[in-house]
Amino acid sequence: MDASLPVTGAWLPGMPAGHRQFLTIAKGHPLALDGGTTLSDVVVAYETWGSLNADASNAILICHAWTGDSHAAGPDGRIQTGGWWDGVIGPGLAIDTDRWFVVCPNVLGGCQGSTGPASPHPADGKPYGSRFPVITIRDMVRVQARLADELGVGVWQAVIGGSMGGMQALEWALTYPKRVRTLVPIATCAQATAQQIAWGAIGRRAILLDEKWRGGDYYDAEPGDGPWQGLAVARMVAQVTFRSDNVFTDRFGRELADGATLRNGFDMWQRFEVERYLDHHGEKLIRRFDTNSYLIIGKAMDLHDVGRGRNGLASAMARITVPTLTMGIWSDMLYPAYQQRQIHDLLRSNGTPSTYIEIDSPHGHDAFLINLEQVGPPIGAFLDSYPA
Image (cartoon, rainbow, N blue to C red; front, side, top):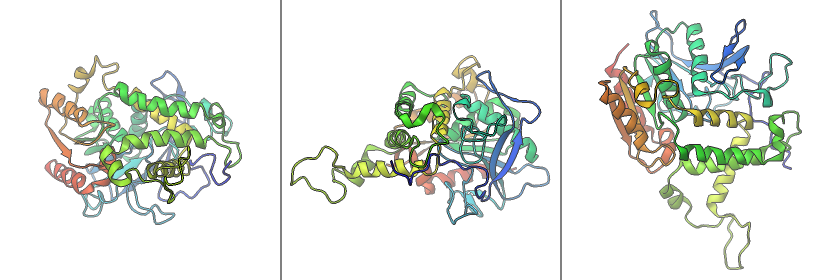
């Protein structure tokens, strides 16, 4: 047992909030969820940049990916840590905060301030744990709509997101078509494929088999006695899908870790450099994320299908009529570029203004977080094409 590892990496009430702001919704009327259950007293943590103009026409919604959070740009207000999209959001950048009022909420089910499995249940103040329901991307978007109401944003000038954030962007255009003027889905899909679900299933099984997960009720365990091994393995599996074969080979090759060599024979648990890299990312996530949130959000991604309840994919995509910039990554093995081209082709076939751009990067799925010199300018030009 490693006592330095937290039971959960969730942000909890009483911790420094940084630049987070908080809104509580569903106080009097429970929030109805896609799965037939409800949630009450739902907290939304969010951050904002820039100022909303007089007619509330300059608001942009940024939607984060699986293990992202509301801190998209700038120092976080606690330590001088940048955001996950520094270089894209800020004064004079592609999403210019001198011009736009930018909002990024932590999703429902998350663990960085919004209501999720680690949050106190309103009935008894204890963590939801196993009591937290399965949710969908649409549920996340419904909560964001309530936040928009509170902020006085009737219509988003743009909804932008990569990976799971792109799923939210598509759902915004379908669930609230009159509240979105333009759309930027990046490295995402209209519906999860069998292979994408398979990757998620392997991660879930790793957590299920960790006896320290305790069926989801592990929050009163001692440090080091939480489900960190299951979460680490799940993250290691996911990390492989975030990068390309070429990047792994070029960076790590067949080198052994810790200065080891093969001159003295073989050792079953002697690590290659790539294993050390995966171990690092597993432990890094343990310290900043919650295992149950990882499960809940991953399941929502697997359930993602814009055609569900809308007479299928083609019928659903025909409902999107706003100008759209779709971005793919040629080396993406998790959400291959054909899925973004499919979004573009379906929109174009219905007469919807749509542009497709492919990022030329060897970095795989994570290129939308790495190759900002290719991501930012097209977004900035697209926003300039449709001024508020």
